[in-house]
Amino acid sequence: MPRVIVSPYRVCPLGAHIDHQGGPVVGTAIDAGTLVAFVANDAPHCRVESTNFPGVYEGSLDGDGEPRDWTRYFWAAAQALRSHGHRPARGLHALVEGALPGGGLSSSASVVLAYLSGLAAVNDIALSPPELVQLARYAENEFVGVKCGILDPACIVGSQRDHLVAIDTEACRWEAVAGERAAAESRFLVAFSGVGRNLRDTGFNDRVDQCHEAARRLGELSGHPATKLGNVDEAIFEKYSHVLPPVLARRARHFFGERRRVLDGIEAWQRGDLAHFGHLMNESCRSSIENFEVGSSEIVALHQLMRTTPGVHGTRFSGAGFGGCVVALVASARADACRQEIEDSYRASAPDRSAARVFIAHGRDGLHIR
Image (cartoon, rainbow, N blue to C red):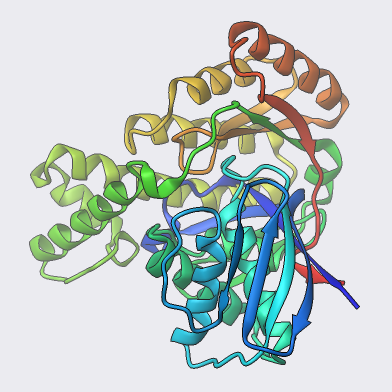
């Protein structure tokens, strides 16, 4: 009997570019994502097909060949399991479909988590939520080649409908944040620019390296060694920021500002202060552009369009900022009107982006198998 894995995408209204440095983040799973239908195979052989991309993954679980196309993600999941001491003896046959692959809504984490869950299910491997999250991160770091943190997998695994999930990325733990008034009076709106991207082929990894280098230098200057900015006191940065090379100072300035915005945003969500939460989203995006220096022309234009649309509380890039989507927090009463106005205006200004679309993202529970 075939089973289906539902692995949602996520939006992250606050917490841009700090999970790989041990910073706090908030997000929520949405009603778009990856579906994987699968059946077990008694032999250690796998066959995976996609409705989104041509070609087929076919091979044994211990295969060492490194695919270069979409099948890389299944291979990465299998390699991550093996690298952590699991020896799956049964393969699977699977059909995978993604709602918006490469769109900046964590489609890579979503599909890797789905593959990990399917392989674990057919081999009776019990993975706790933190183990699943860490395996997904390891697969992306070591086998996909993206130096991400745990934001995406933790949000996909840990989300609860109508809540934000607040993630301690250093400790790999999370909790649901209730905000009845905020949830009732707002919606998240997602605008896809029509421009996809693969993080491995962007400047994302370089910026992660710059954050680590900023932490290392601040550690040397203060006499308190550090490998990531989350282990550096902000007072140390304020004391020595003028000594850092300007690019490293900008990366660190973004980290410390975003960390404050996340903690402030959690409190704003709990008390239903949507105006302030939206302001923090706008400030997050401004810092992403000025200090983290990301933002393609398309998504910068989308951000500016969305933030000036009546009913929008705040907006920022969804994902790393090299293409993909922009997410906005909008008043519930204006959600449908905002969606139409933004889509019409963007398509008029960018008629060559025929794939662009805008949709209301409804909250969902995290990954599950049915």
